[in-house]
Image (tube, rainbow, N blue to C red):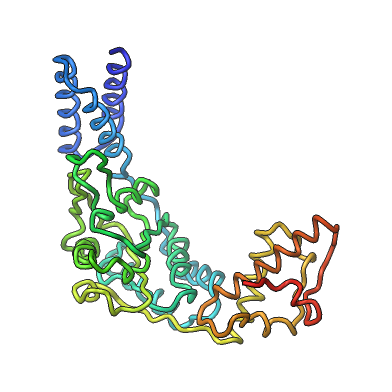
Length: 345
């Protein structure tokens, strides 16, 4: 009984120290009071776990916490350019979009329509969203929609169910610890077919300024203001996206990369990152010019960068292994030895 009382005291103390919406604070305090009375009368201890879990979730959300955001378009341009080669028109559209929002509202609150990057796998959709978050100094979180099986994944389950838990939106807010993050809704066209209509209905609520200021997660069961969240979406194509959702999106088509663009990106971005992440020194592996056209298409045409990334990283891992096993100080990758290093998928 002592442990039970100490847990109730812990929860009461947590409520006292956490700033919550007034109605939610009263609701949570009432739950604790009823729990205390129930336990004194010999009630089920399982209710303690349910109330404890609920209050822990409610007090962990950033109801009034926001991060300071950057409103410097010049800095935003620098970050976009440093993270992404080319994509000039897309970068301009992003900068124009943010500029209008700053001038119109005085803050970077992203209102509908929401940016939606559409393109094939590996064309930079997800990394562009992450770069926008970096440029704005907002925390970033990705919610994958691929294969999502039901609206409860987004909206949570009612606490009447034994294993109920909040949805992905609430979990994301807890992770980032701020009410104004950048949330990437990734591949919204790839949800399961049988649940598509329900999930699209929740998406309309999430992306609509007239509705998302009072988003209702079934577990939290209290309106959550998402109007400060900057939502970005991605899709491989728009065929499976409901019309009502598309109406709230500003679609930006991502282009496929040419071989010459891939070579430049491989040299300036991918190779440097691969060397850093595999622990090699800058001089331990050198790619001769002649090999780049050959590693751009190891398995045929690929519109994105995934194959090139896998190939470059695979080569660097093989070099790292040689550096440890055979004490090799430096290796030049050329046409003569490329077959020895290029991964066989």
